[in-house]
Every structure is written in structure tokens, then in C-alpha cells.
Amino acid sequence: MPKIEPQFIIPFAKPSGITSFTSLWQVKHTLGTKKVGHTGTLDSFADGLLVLLSGKLTKLVPYITDFDKTYRVLFYFGKETDTLDPEGTVIAEKPLPVYADFIAAIRQLTGHIEQVPPVYSAVKQAGERLSDKIRRGETVTVPPRTVTIYSIDIEEIFYAPEADTDAEKSEIGAAQKVLGAVLCVRCSKGTYIRALVRDIAHRCGSAAYVYGLRRTAVGPFTLEQAAGFSALQPFGSAAVSTEGAPYSVTDEEVKRAALPLNEEIAGAMHFQIAVLQEKYYAAFMNGKPINGYWFTGTQPLSDGGPIAVFYQGSCTGLIIKNGNRFHYETVFNQS
Image 1 (cartoon, rainbow, N blue to C red):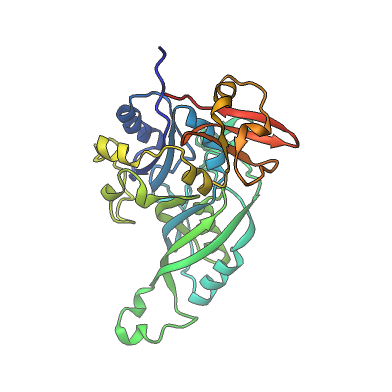
Image 2 (spheres, rainbow, N blue to C red; image 1 turned 30 degrees about the vertical axis):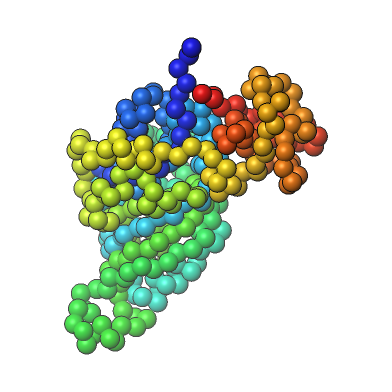
């Protein structure tokens, strides 16, 4: 009998200083499978939530990739690096902005905006990453694209040293110079936080780069539920590379974090739910043409969106409805 691959959604906390691909090894080892995929990488210097998928649940990649993301970002004004992060070379130095201009820039960059991705990025042109082209010394032109910044919340502002005394801090106003900040950003897929920080600084007449970046949520999945969350360094303290450092995530943590695609999670992912009747289970698993009367439930199934099909509490596959016809997206292995 062929081996059935484990099918899980695994929220995983990537530490700073390693690649997203390196993070896959721990999960592959724990689950005893070679089939583990990610739903969006994080830069090496960044840390936070990766949503990993095993077995046939890798078919969920495009759905999870489409989810909104939430990040915490720590940055400083005054200097800009070529990579827009702490691993780059300083290419510009400009004065610190004042508080009023900083707040105005945040407001201007909230909503639907045009963003030019960083040249050091995974964006591809003619099938090749921009970062590979730029490292060969080629000149690249990056076209802007539309992204959505749903919210930018200020968690902390660092003011210039002249406001160090308590008396001076009480007088902080619109003209006070800003050294840096910690922001919480909720944004659409395709958004580069490094580019957002660059653009905030440029709107202020300054320069900036990201020092710390942490992804805290991907759609309904949160960093707090991820394997390895408790092992992360305090935010902003792990910007230096730790490549090659041993993992401190146990197999038990990975197993506890691994989630089956149940009805609750499918609902949180905005999938429609259909429950398969027992007498049609074999037909469904064998890919026979689907009929609407196979399913029970009081809610009619609508066209277009993915439908998660469940049988005896387990997800057996994803289908799409188009008029009176149904189409298979994927069928999941059942033990």
C-alpha cells in the first residue's frame, strides 16, 4: 500500500538570520515527509510567521498566498541602504524628519498606493529575480504596482537626542525631529515593507532602512500559534545573521502546531463548506462527475469561490461551482 503523506497546515516561526527554505528542513524531518512547501518567504534578516503546508495540502498555496499580511517593523531615519535593510551598504544620508511630516507621510501611504518593489527582491523579470540581475551589475528598472495598506499603527516613536530630558519630552510637538519608529502594518499580498519604509522616508525628505521586521499574521493564522514562537529573540534584537545556528524548536512543538484542514479552519479561510453523503464518497474520491445532490447542508453553494468538501469530519478535497456544474480543484488522500 503506498505511503500516505501527512497533510497539515503548519504555522512556523522563522528566526532571523536563516532563509525560509532552511526552515522547511525541521518540518520535513518531524513529519517524515519530503513534501513541504511555503506560502511566501521572509527575508533572511526578518523573522516571524511562515505558513507551511505538507502533502496534498500544498494545493492550498495560492489561497494562502492571497491573504493579507500583518508585520511589525523597526526602522531608523537618516540613512538608506541599497537593500533597504541592515545587510546592505549605505547609499544615501539625509536629515531627520520632523514629527508632523512623518505623520503626514503615513497618512498619504495608507490605502491603495503605487509601490516600486526593492531592486533586491524576488520580483522576476524575464523569469529571473531582480536581485540576481543587480548582483551581476546589471541596471534594472522596476515598474510600480498597486498594493493596499489597510492600516499603519504607530507602536513607538524614537525622538532625536535633543529630547532626552523629561522637560524637553513634555514639549514634543510637530517640529520635533524623529529618529525612528516601530509600526504595525496590515497590507495586501505583494507589499514590500522595506519599500514602504523607503517611501515614508522620501515623503518626509529623509532616508531610512528597515532594522527589524517580523511577520505576525497571514490571513487567519497568527505568529502566537506557530511552532518556535517562544524561541524567537526579542523583536529588533536579532537583525544580525545567525545562519547556521541550531534550531531550538522541538519535534513536539511542530506536531502541536500542525493543523488539519478542518471545517473551522476552512471557514476562517473563507471557503464554502459542503458535506458529502456517504453513498457518494467513493464516486468523489474516484473523480466521477459531481452532482449537487451529493452534498447535505442548508446553505446553497455559490459560484466562483473554493468549496471545501468534508466527509466524516475530514476534508476530502476542494471543488469549484460554475452554474450547475462542479469542477475538481484537488482530492486529498484519506487514510
